[in-house]
Image (cartoon, rainbow, N blue to C red; front, side, top):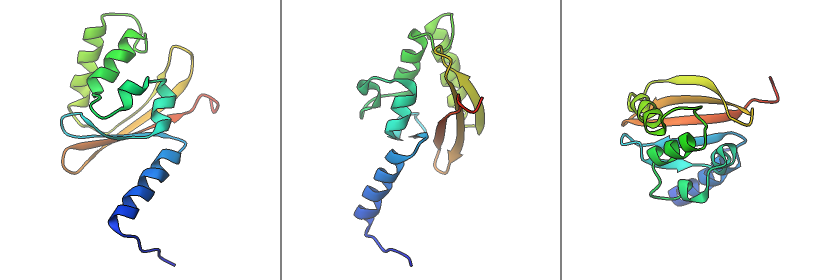
Length: 128
């Protein structure tokens, strides 16, 4: 049985479903401005609320990560520059990221039509 919903109800239902996923999810536009992110994404990376509100930027999140030691030691500005240059390529990718606290997150991204990127973030520490 198919359920028919109007577009407003579909959008609300989709937003609720995405927020209940056990994986983090982000969608960025061609300018690397966030279009969508779910609460699991924020939890996995312990981001403050300010980094997950409208107006937040990928560069701001990357800078936060760099200053928190998420990318290891080194110059935070250079770490952010390198990662932003990679992101601007909009290439498919999948890798594991080990956070300073030892948790492991699988990060997989794929380009979408219109110059967007969708990325999932899955906590895989327990399976290791």
